[in-house]
Each structure stands twice: as structure tokens, then as C-alpha cells.
Image (cartoon, helix red, strand yellow):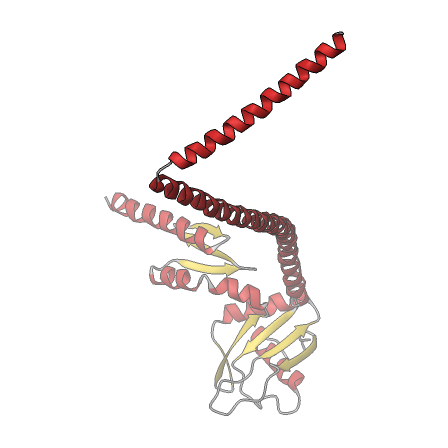
Length: 288
């Protein structure tokens, strides 16, 4: 009996559901019949627009997906480029450090090479102004006579020994052009000093009516450094200041019987300007 009752309830429920569906269908059909034409047209347009909008949204979604993919690829490329740039910057910094180290080493080596060259010329002398052809075929004989003239030696006296001597290594100039200088290397450094001091003591030197000069054989770097004092030396000479250049390139000036030595042109300009101002300021006091 209980099973029979449950079956009856199920059958009644299914009948009710079927009747509800029929009612809804009939209601919808009745509603469609009652809907005005303009409303149906509006609903149809709305549905069509919704379909178009869905299609466009699908296109937009596809485009956004494609753009996102491209953006990711670009981001990966930028990241890779930044890494390469960072690696290059690190490499450049290392190379800059290496270059700076090498520059310091080159500068140190250049100073040492110049010192070695200067030491190799320690016994050298340059004679400037001797006419071409004076030596005929024997330059050593001419130098022997010049040494006797400069040092006031007798025929029986021995002259400084010369290891080697030659004219400047360039083509022989035209007669109207300045003659090539004579470069010689003495055997002893003391003989070089004697010649330089004797030439300085004599003042003007001449041979066969032609003036000539004796100078130290300096390196190109030392000559360049000394040339930086030229303007200062000319100005001091105009003011009557005794001035000279010490080896390798130091300026020495005597002001108020006081010897002042300067290592660089900048130091010389500052120091001499200050000393000369003091000298000018003290002149009226001493006069009074």
C-alpha cells in the first residue's frame, strides 16, 4: 500500500509539471500574439545588435590577445637589450680602468725613457753656427783647434778627448741657409763642463769670422720644457733681472741678491710677480 501511494504522488507531480509547461507555452504564445509589431521589431533589432556586439567583442578579445603576445615579446626583447647594455657598460668600465692603468704606465715609462736619453747625452755638446766645409775632411782636427781656442791651450797641451762627432743627420743645406750643427760626445764629463764654463767666460765665440755657440745636447722634451720659460725670461731681462735655466728645466732668478729657483712656469709667474711687487714697494722706503 505505501508503494502504491508514492506512485500515485509521482504521477500527480508529473502531470502538474506537464500542465505548467503547457500553461507557460500557451502564455508565451498568447504574449507573442499580444505584443505589438513595433515592439517585436525593436526586440529583433536588439537581438541583432547584441549578436553584432558579441562578434565585435570577440574580435577585440582576439586583438587584445595578439597585442598582449606582441607586448610580451617586446618586453622580452627590451629585457634582453637592457642586459646586453648592462654587460657592455660593465665591460666598458673594466676597459676604462685598464686604459687608465696603461696610461699611467705609459706616462711613467715615457719619463724613464726621457731620463735614460738625457743620461745617454750627458757627455754630449752641440756646436751651432760653424760653416759647412770648415772641417774639410777631418772634423776631429777642427774640433781640436776649437778646443784650444776656447780653453786657451798651448800646442803642447792635451785637448779633451772626443769619442765621436758628426754634423746633424740631414741633407747639406744651401749656402744661404743656416749650417747644420755639430754634435759630439766627449769621453769625460769633466771636459764637457770645462768647455761650457770656458765658453761662457769668453762670452762671444767666433771662428774664421763666423760666430758660433756651444750648448748642451738636450732631449726634445727638455727643450720643450725650457721653451715654456721664454716669455718669462724675456720679461725679466727687460726689467734687469739676472735669470737663467738650470738642468733639466728649472728657472733661476736673482732678485735683491737673493737666488730663487722655480720648478714650473706657473710657479715662476706667481713667485716672481710677488717678489717683484715687494721689490717695487720697498724702493720708495729705501730712497727715503
